[in-house]
Length: 524
Image (cartoon, one colour):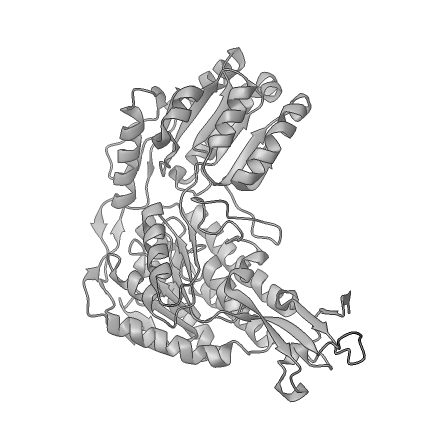
């Protein structure tokens, strides 16, 4: 497929009329062709108009038709072949194996949602039949289902050009819910976005879905994103990115005449608690796992272990010694873009220049462009508690160790943590009493609590939660990964005493879609 540098609005490929965007190969700083002319407000208006028109039809597609559509998107992405991987490698600096795995995850989560749609559980059908003879008052017939919110704006992420981008989790779950999607592609990988966008566009055509079911826009800066969120036809937003970017979209969404939800994943440092007995028994082994997790993908994961908490003593020193060895031998890795590399360097400088922090180790140096040099720093619990900036995320392979005087210090640090995507407990059986004390704290602070693993790597499955209290995400009640993500883009509707002919298919007495229903409080 030849890249054209165009916007995809419904079934059309349109040349933008705003400032051009060129991808940059972060390994060389080479500008990549073609240039992508950004959208204007006119293109935003057209995409939103088509999406609103599409919603009327798309929201009522049968379960099987919608599931086949999601399956077809996955097949179309796979059909691009190696051209997709090569372009993504050039635009991100990520290795082939990582991107091939990410493509598998992307297609896997589309197929997961296809199966979720087929099952129909997400409709959450509830029927309370009329009770005309009930005393002292009769009950009318009441029936409930979940319905898609309406058109959704999705912002592609920088660090996952496939799995959290054009056809990533936000798009998959919104389409599964019956919501047309307008994606603002990330400026760092527009070619990858176009390839995937054309695959979605083809699936729309193949499956006979309304033209406005999907659109893909590009635009530098925040103007197009703000225009999307401001448009009255957009009913929800999916975003993965910086805290400042997420807060800006939230402000716009709440300032509308009709405020809308913004599901923003923004900031997490993913604390790891090293419990005493585990540290004593296998400190060096834990250190090896920690360094491996920290360095994975140059630390450009939302779940990167950016904070380590433990009681000061010989066992912690053993861990630090082993971690220092691993960090010092860590080869530099190419970061996703010059912008991300610049922000990483600023973050490392902020920590290293703090009088409350001492450097433990830094990784090897490479003078090639945009290289991430791993870093490990140490502070005390008291200084961490008194310096709020030490909780700020450094997006890359750098972590901060907090030395605590005792278990009470550990608890105090846990209580002061901001909201997180993950919290990890490295523990042995002898640590269980102390862990029980921590559990009521950490489960309030994180969307996922792990034992004896590492947070990098998010399984796409029914039980997964990828979310957490602010600022990890803007809405602590939701997840962006796993089948429960569909509920972000749904709302309940109750139908009271409607004639059978006016009822949606899953609410009719004959249950033509054969979905699970709760009838008079009992599961059919």
